[in-house]
Length: 98
Image 1 (cartoon, rainbow, N blue to C red):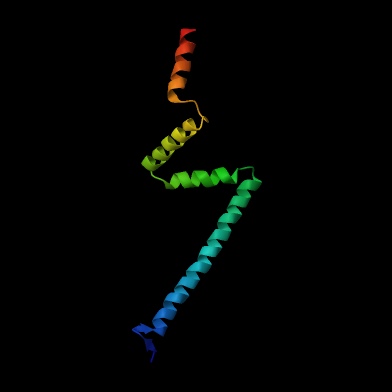
Image 2 (tube, rainbow, N blue to C red; image 1 turned 180 degrees about the horizontal axis):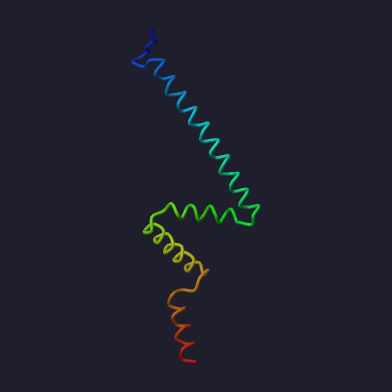
């Protein structure tokens, strides 16, 4: 007979704990495999940081990705890292006039 403490049986709890432990071990093994693949890619000249960003972008749906790109452009323009759309249009117009 399994002990029952406050409506919780030891055997039932042990099963959950053991399942979680097995899954944690599988997660660690998968994480190690992923690190190995990134290491191979790096050894072949790929930029792992950029690869991680591409993977992150591929997980997003198109609308979220577009929103993020738009906000990134806005923030970069606000910080002077990109020309503003109005100054880009002015430059294009002055080049056409020349």
